[in-house]
Image (cartoon, rainbow, N blue to C red; front, side, top):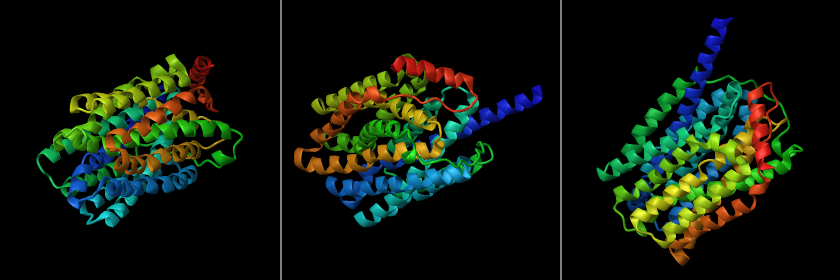
Amino acid sequence: MLHDISISRRAQKAARIATATAFFLDGMTFATWVSRIPAVQERLHLRNATLGVALLMMSLGALLTMPLMGRLVARRGSRVGTVLAVAVFGAALPGPGVATGVITLGLALFAAGVGFGAVNVAANAQAVAVERRYGRPIMGSFHATFSFGGIVGAILGSLAAARAVPPVVHFAVVGMIVVVVAFLLGPVLIQDPPTAVPQAGQSHKGSVFLFLGIIAFCTSMGEGAMSDWSAVFLRQVSRSPASVAALGFAAFSVSMTLGRLLADRVTIALGPAGIVRLGGLLAGTGLFVAMLLPAAATALGGFALVGLGLSALIPTIFSAAGRVPGVAPSVAIATVATTGYFGFLSGPPLIGLSSEVVSLRWAVGLVVIACGVAIALARHVGVQPVANDSMPVERHCTRVNAAAA
């Protein structure tokens, strides 16, 4: 019996490492693209508004994929879904590097968005399954590895930009590594059973998903602004060289990683509502500083504060959605993620279009407004207890709910 328990614990640890690796690959792949946006924009001679429309296609691909992936994972399990999603995202990465104009760039980004959206649902559903096995909150640590992957991807992007490595070469190398590692994860991930339950939108918990989705929308809008426009902001507004501009997303990702490493403990201490209020305040303040003082140093500091502020919001929201009784975790996560991803869908192109009217420096103020909305709705955020026999998680949820009351 002791031997069986030991094997089970080793399997749980291995599944946690494999799931964290999937998050890492997701973050590295995404950062690889965003760190070279200025290079692709300059190579194709795209205006900000035109680039914003192309970026919209990646968001659209993700948005259309997430509900479908939620149902697929509910039927087939998150293990297969995670492997395939990460592999598709990696395989799509070289596309933007070979684009010849705005149309081909948009198609390539749509394909990348399909992979990115699929990973968001499948990997988070796998994370919920692992979290249930552990019986305690660990979702923040998974999202920290996503951010750490973003740091690595951004640093590699900065080095590639400094050495004038063509984006297509850079993208092809990273994409090949991601695809190979993705298929190595399959045997280690948890095989969660199929779940046949009502969709989240048909659940009596619909109001829970509404408020979680709105907070996710505001958070995703801030993350989308940092990923798509931080490097461009530093390049155009701060007048920084390409190697420094690529560090904009790195500054955001570093602080987000640090925040997510502490997210689980901070959530217990402050409660979900407190996390949203504090996070929205920090993120809004950071971007406001970058707008008022757009020099490279202060802008990088402001972007770092945005990352710290937004760090714990999405892990808290996804973990709460995945624990709503009577709804498959993948369907619940897909519902909240789809609503939230409208921030990615609307944020980057709105900022691009607004920059044609008020300049990019002031257009990012849209995110400051979104942070204010998140703060205003913070009182509606709560964590639903999971319907299983894991007493540590139930006690944790009770403590969080008490803190939010």
